[in-house]
Length: 305
Image (cartoon, rainbow, N blue to C red):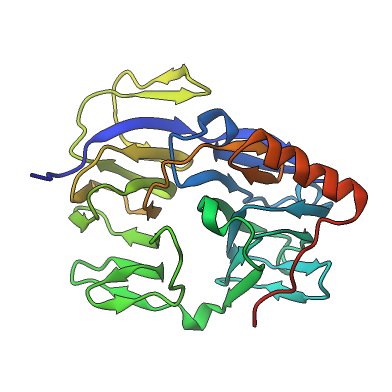
């Protein structure tokens, strides 16, 4: 019988550089391949220094995945090889399904004060849907429902359902849940989860305890112990917690509030062949994708309306 989830592994996001020189923190990625199935990567690109993000992510291809971009502050201008153009602004979400292939660029611009805060999550596509037509789901901030709880907490529901309130992103193959949760000090909160789904939390502000963990735990990165918490097992900004199976996640706060992303999805259990921005199921499919990109035959479909 399912029970409350326990902490399986804890990670600390680590500095890296991507695109044309964007400084960001990677919560997990290629080094953890398969561990977060159906998710592949989570990047945290929060910065107050335009020199760290303004060069952006110039034209590059994607195939076989979905990229989910969530902006807290600032804006990202995007365009693609099919002629689409747009802006993801503060509070907005873009859920892009690359499918059979798309070539696009993403250029962070920041807000009037130079602040750029956002996250990009990669979700894998099932083998049967790898070559589906590309599509976008652009969700403006005012279309994302916010639940205010009796204890003073708030939940922004990007996708999934909380208290019969459904998020705007629906009909995704991996049955995902993507929540932005803020809890005040001195409370205990229990969030139901679907047994069998992969569930993780990424702390973006404040401090708190997950799964009643009141003993030191160990951060891990790239399969190696990274940092032992010798005294206080509190999770703070930049901490990612991957949970074991179960039907709920518990969070407690003491003298501080906490804000975190809670993300869940149904594992695919399929082989992964991954290089750069393309993720397929076999090395032959991966080789073919890059060959088509070099030869100019990469794009297969126009986006769905």
